[in-house]
Length: 298
Image (cartoon, one colour):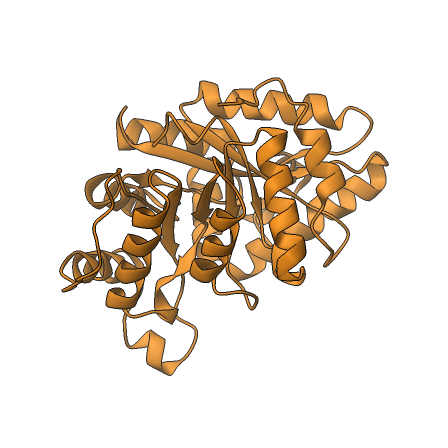
């Protein structure tokens, strides 16, 4: 899959706010811009699996990936059936990214972390499915940050999708995964030209995640950052490690960060455009990112 996914893609949840007709138009343009893949997150918008079908049906070559589909919202049989259905209908164009955290009493009973994910993957593989099997390779990755989840991704799936990580994590994950697993890294970027406004956008994004994600905090501490830097008031050093761009040389900075991830062992870097708040899909910024030197047109 790493030979068809391209070196640069997009990661977004902004398509959830767009009507279906507009989503089709945007997907077709993303494909024409030359991005290798379009990764869609899951929050409180579209079901990412039906959303993936919408995007795949609107394009011809673009790889569509869930980044991630929440295992706590779907029975393993339902997830496996959707995965096989999309892989069979669109050979070599669908990547199933899995992850998530418990969010209520029912889902907390499923457990969490590596053991819950391992059991879930086993249940998917044991599902008594009757729909046709894809004639092309199926690709499944985990939203993995911590070393144990990265290890599981290498053992039981095709690779990992680390979210909000610095280049140092990419190097560590590649060493742990070995040379053959797919390593697709999400990279937050800011294209705002005003340096102060860009800094505010970057800080707000990082602060939000560090306030709620223990795994992200642990990851940054393991990489050598200090406890007082990894809080809901992150240091500039932490923000700069996690977000690229901002200011008049934003594209140059983003290009350098993409190259750094690729040199550190990433097969693919998916760029998430940060803006000042909930917005329509940032197509103008996606067009600018299409100018990056590392973009591969397949």
